[in-house]
Image (tube, rainbow, N blue to C red):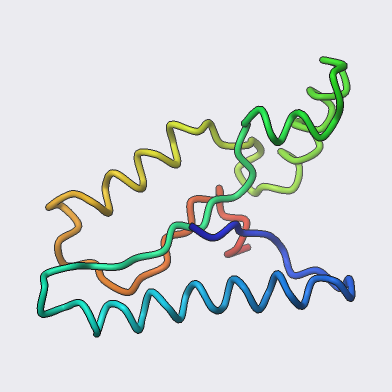
Length: 116
């Protein structure tokens, strides 16, 4: 799984960008390498997700945590952060027979953040 975000101009972001590109390229390569075994490989790239790890970045204060979530929602075109179950449903779809013809793809589950 790869996290989505707007391109950053910070000097330290080169390693993050390189890591994301590597994950996407591994999925494409493994799709070819594993096709004879019937294994499909895809990438899920979530946007901001309301998890204990995310809200914990704001510290223990509930108001600050909500403020962080509110700010992050302003960065997402649909105006909210995801719940973990929304990301899980996307993963479950890719693992299901309904996605049996999806391979080597990157599914953005980010409220439109990577597309707008």
